[in-house]
Amino acid sequence: MTYRTIARTCTGEIEVSRSRFLAVVARVETEEAARAVIGEQRSRYADARHHCSAFVLGPDGRIERSNDDGEPSGTAGAPMLAALRAGAGLRSGAGLRAGLRSGAESARGDAVRGDAVRGNAARGNAAREDAARTGTTTTGATTTGPSDGGLTDVVAVVTRWFGGTLLGTGGLARAYAGAVEAALAGATPVIRRQRALLDVPLSHAEAGKVEAGLRAHAAVEVLDADYTGAGVTLHLAADDADSVDALLAALTAGAATAHRTGTVWRDTRETSADVRAPED
Image (cartoon, rainbow, N blue to C red; front, side):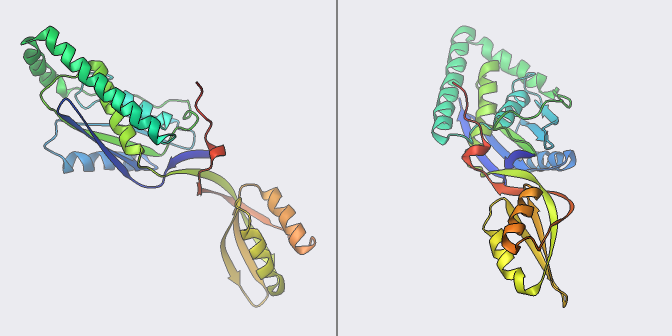
């Protein structure tokens, strides 16, 4: 079993019609850790009007939450959540940049057209939007896993400084999603694999050769080695325990066997085979 996440925290920022959107995407494994990241951003940028958030947790992405933090319902947390679940920004940097330009231009276009239609009424709407900023929107846990290429065990927080121009619901949604995508453009994706834990007892004479042979295979990690007077025990993590048995048989002429001791989640480098190409 595998899932996709990020190696470390990443940030990105975009500006739309003088509103600044600063995104932070961090790797977390619990709701408590996700909420701690949200709280840290809220405290760090206390002068900002909004700190909208979304997170996805668990190997199957079963737990997800989003919060609009006073923005009109569905215009912030949900688009951010969709960006995380799509892994937007990780597949193609060029495609991301084009999408960000398109989204930002569209958001600016929405704002300009809205101003032309509303005129002075826009200022009244801005006041009403400010008054509405006390509401929040939160989604509950779901039973669907992340899409192909999507992320889990991540939290995104987008802090917005209002620039004085209403963006409209579509413009807000594109801006919040675009900020998350801008952060993910600098992320390092990793694949978390559930690997079998194995112990391999060996004689001192064969330990060096066997360890070198095992290390030559990407699907096998040598985690540690215990040396005693009686021999050496290699501690392994492997994608497939049966394949380790076959390797050991070849390396020791059938003399060594692996003993299963459990399972563990391990970070591994992403390859092209780990992410399905997006469909046209």
